[in-house]
Image 1 (cartoon, rainbow, N blue to C red):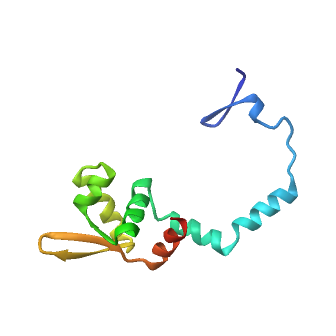
Image 2 (image 1 turned 180 degrees about the vertical axis):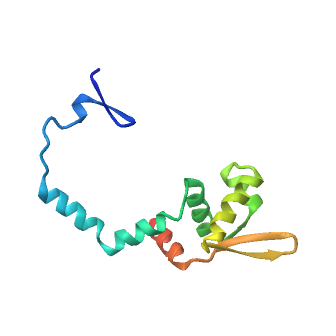
Length: 122
């Protein structure tokens, strides 16, 4: 297999153009698409999440409105400490908020823009 090294990536030679020609219409169309307000909003929202676990938390909270750290740990197959870490990161960004019921703290989606965005995906 013939390969070419591009920085850290190694690619098959047949997966790289043999000539350097730009299709200006495609480049313009792609640029215009990325500049759409809806796409920019989506990129801004998604940039708040550092991994899939945090996105899964949002979907779980859409399904049942609120969950405690024990529930999240069980759903994501994580330790309590790891689940708590993800919840805290989302709460620190004002994406989630909490309410206390006795000794249990429940998390829920605070950010309506996030709720609306993920509801459209689900």
